[in-house]
Image 1: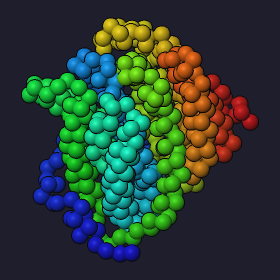
Image 2 (image 1 turned 30 degrees about the vertical axis):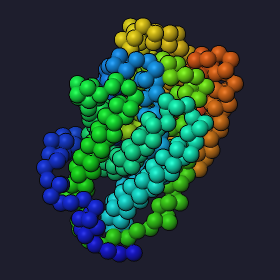
Image 3 (image 1 turned 60 degrees about the vertical axis):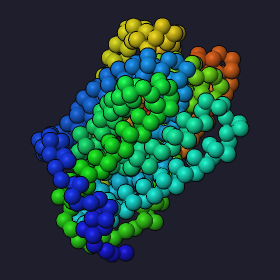
Image 4 (image 1 turned 135 degrees about the horizontal axis):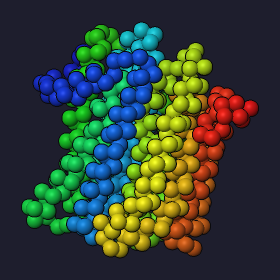
Length: 466
């Protein structure tokens, strides 16, 4: 299938809108990512790490203010709706937001420019269409299930699905930027710009006299999501068009879909696993409990962001090393475990020391979540102790077995939540999450060793598992 990339790109994004959107970020990325291969991955991880630090601070401040403005009940409703939309929006990419990180470096290395142009354009169109269809089905599903849903959730969930296409497109654009090592383009919109805009729009709506409730917060989120994603689309498209010469393109959609589907399963299981506790608390307990648990988990984000920052920086380098460089891959993979573990351990101690005064900022009732941190932090550190194993498996073509590991872990997590939440409440959710993360870390590390012969464990020598 061949047609003009310039024509298609013109249809997809009006050229007049693509003027002067990203000169500052472009210059910064050009300065940061021009050295040798390992240095490039390391710098991308450092930039991602820095963005995650700032993001964690912004997210914490914004969530504190939202909780103070709305109160725990309305805040709990908003939290459950927003977490659900972020999960579904990510899954609506159907794996393309990660598979492009694998295909783009490969096509560039092999000089397959027609295929490169094809995946850049086709992936955006596919994700936008798929996510819009899923959003429509989601709204219909909520409306049909309204008799079985608590009344205070129905309208917020129907409003929330409006965000889905833009959340999905933003995740895909993040993948396109990561495939080119544009760390600022990849992470800034989602982790810096969008939360600031949500807070700004919420403040403006409250100043204009709107009620301080979940619906107002969701309207602010819709406006912020669309503004952020459309700007991100303009910036990424502008850079891609400068780097990829115009010409015909080939679309191998069936091949891309076959590779993306297992990745979709991996990402689905990972995202659900990461957020299953919040969703399960929402299913079994009232919005006040959801608010307390979510605030506790948000405090833990200071530890989580280390893992995600390293993952964002190394996935593209994993993909390049898998093409005939097993020794470099093994050495680099072992190095990324240290990048993940030691900063995570440091941040874990910091969170435990400051957790209670941080939670009291949300409101006096939120301090009941502080003891949960001591249990939850074990799971987070256990995950950090094996590094970004799932990225290594996915980028090396072992996405199927990675999906199977996550499926088992998710089933284990949900089963524990079903049993433990009715018995122990929020403690049950925390126990289920910690045990599931420890199981996940062990299973992924073992799988990497069996499939690739690489020992991904911080205290195990490189040949210790043999």
